[in-house]
Length: 425
Ligand SMILES: *Cc1c(COP(=O)(O)O)cnc(C)c1O
Image 1 (cartoon, rainbow, N blue to C red):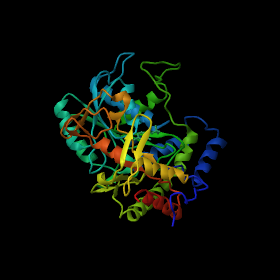
Image 2: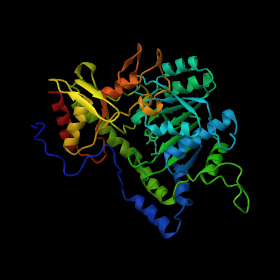
Image 3: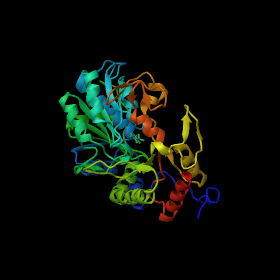
Image 4: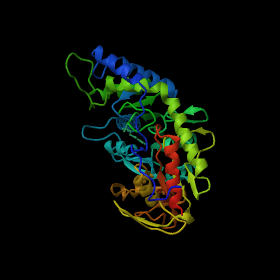
């Protein structure tokens, strides 16, 4: 048996999630090289757009340098549709409130701010760890003028994006779906990335498939796809010289990156399968501990991108976090994310805290976060604040992401599991 200080660290680090290559990627990179399509035009890009749209079940995909830029163009498209073209020096969402997922990576929210919007966060539901539809309804009561919602699927486990879409329709609001973490996941047989009026997927190095970087904007509107493609290549007008009528961006995907992505797509399902095995192994092996893993919502098939756990309230030892450090007091039979993360790290494996909710971030301290029962005025990491429950802060407090790399062997995962169990002694 392993004891905490007897476990030998892995020789090679076990990552949270790292690129898994298969060989075909190289063929498409080489093709781009040999034919000299080494820029932002070429067959690989055309193929990525075709495959991405087909896989997601939408009409059009626009290949971009990353998912953040895709989300930016989603915000710009939505903003112009809702409020008209902004004048020079203003964003398309200038001064407008936008509802956003709260417990997510900050790339969900930044693009709202790029366009001058004011994010209002919507609390997370315990049932799915995604945006709470009841809290969203509540938010529309408080702010009936809001016309845009940005929703992210957390860790590849879809929540009730169908309900979220219904609520948006009821309030004449548009929906941007940030499916960066959820490529290949489904709800009621429908792919993530096909629920929003606009959606974005990511090929970042740690995602389920990767191009080293890259992303796609997904839409069913040819006008929107054409606009996004134009904006992404410096918004050039059709003229013999560089003619400009609106602000442009340099957001197009490289044909070399597209080659990697093209080679990865045939392996998407295989990656989902191996991530699912990792999740299920954690689930079975940790079943006697006072923990829960990412919840799976009825009707969904997750892509299992990251396996995460939450420690039950009564098995948490004391833990406090400020803006950069954490401290805990060890108690017999109890533990906390900080201790487990230290233990995982001590054997040369990588874990991570749950994405810290946006309303707890210093830069959004003054922004509202709406929970089921009203506005959360939480400016600390206490998870009950002013009588309104703060689900996101609570999940952050008690949760962590486990090593979920495709290339981790069963034996390596067994050792990680053993080390986690030891923390509860
Ligand atoms: C990774 C990620 C993004 C950003 O993707 P990039 O391709 O790195 O720009 C956006 N949203 C979420 C939820 C993510 O996890």
